[in-house]
Length: 210
Length: 210
DNA sequence: TAGATTGTTAATCGATTAACAATC
DNA sequence: TAGATTGTTAATCGATTAACAATC
Image 1 (cartoon, rainbow over the protein chains, first blue to last red):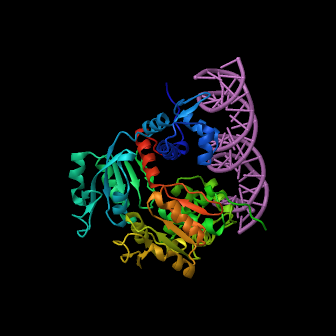
Image 2: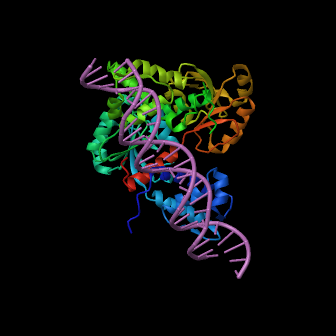
Image 3: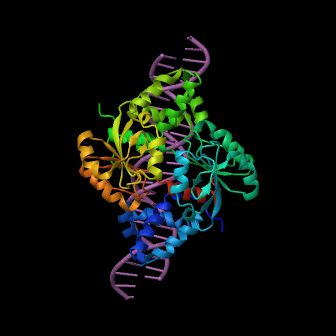
């Protein structure tokens, strides 16, 4: 069949659809048209139909979309039902918050190891796991073969840590260090909290409501 | 003069330029051409020149850009040099991490108050401040007139908390709850950590390097 | 069947890239 | 001056919106 590669712009909207569909399900709504959904989400009905049709025809002409079916399709598309193992490097403020706060399971992952260099932190419980010494990382990784690395180390350490993890076979990262990382054949999903705050500063001064 | 409104797409790239320019300064580089910068950043020289020219002609033909001058211009554009006060609602895992981890000053803000409902958390020190009972928020706000609210409460509380803050005169929010918020004449800078993780899940399965 | 709403094609809009004249 | 590189206009590309035929 050879489906065209879908643009990341579209993919990044899928979680939003997912949230709205879940909300509808909770409200006991079984059926929704692109028009109704567009009014709730503040985007055009056209865009919704275009987005969904990148992945398949999930609706029914004259009727609309079955909320549960569509929600489940999005789970499939995003692979949220297939859990992969993740290890975290850096259990400082931010790492601990991420480990404790994020529901990995519902996002298609399982946090299986947390590592740090700081003796004050090693041994503490974070995200339901005991923080291990980062020197244990190679053995642990060879044993459990995690697929994802979560980078919550200080910015100046990120290159070294990422390179070590890549050498251990990890090929995808959730990167909280704020440093842009690029490596061939490696996926970096970068979170730029500081940049978001700077953008807010701009928006306040130049009142861009949007 | 009536400068055209700059698209948020461009504005969201400014922090990135800022980081790269800072890095260059640290390396003692005084001068850079759009071509050299484009190679470092992995974007086109054309885009750099277009982006910067939205805000003014900061370069010199035949020479390039003075790194320090350009960096300082970006600070001006983003208003990072004019600090505004922010209050945080919700000092759970995530709120504490944000308060402790983020350098507000360098992003044009000052964190002046942290509030929570949980007696276990009230009185603790977070981000250099003592966590206050959220019932103190109205008095505190009337007194110190903060401009920004940081929303790190549980998702189901965000509407109530935001509405209270708006009623107290706050018109801009850094929203960590993962819930989309829209209110007329109010700025919401939304951080969607969970969505980022779902996108990573998709990218792993569909290997979109980019 | 008539009405509604999708899937899909075509038109528009905006953002990115290319090209080049201006000029340091 | 000659060479380099910007600022800016024009061309291209991609994403969004509009329109409508297909069809439930």
